[in-house]
Amino acid sequence: MQTEDRITIDIFKVVTRAIAESTNLEIMTKHLTQLLVGALEIKGASIFAANIETKELEVLGSFGLSIRYMNKGPLFFNRSIMSVNKKKAVVVRDVKQSDQLQYPEDAIQEGIGAIVAVPVTFSGRVIGVLRLYHSTVWDISDRDLDSLFVLTEIIGLAMMYARMHNAISDVKIIIGDVHEAWTE
Image (cartoon, rainbow, N blue to C red; front, side, top):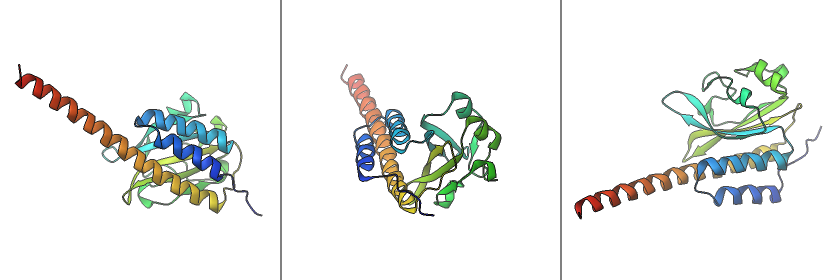
């Protein structure tokens, strides 16, 4: 059975523009998840950052999922549907038939039928995860998976750019404060 490609060039343009037009990571990830949910006609989307110290995935932005589901508990690298270090997409085609979920009952109760998780990378390192949630069983096409890998590389660039932008802004403020203190 042939699966239908859902990620068109028009969707890709809109999504990449949303990423490129923001230096605020929280706003960018919220817009991006909203765009993906609407464009792909799926239940929800989330973008997570990998916290190396706690070995958890931390939510940067999400859309379409309940607060209860988002607060179900920590997502640990080694127990979540995706080992962040593998650099491979994980497709949970049917959550009711999968043993890959850390919180399977919560996913079913939330009305999630399928999950696609794609690593967010920067410079060959996994720094986060994009998850797409569908309300029914989902056979995602190979082409859409390829498109999602390109998208997550762009998200990785945007995450690092936002972090650098914020760090430079902080340094600029500190230098201004020091300069002001010395000139008094």
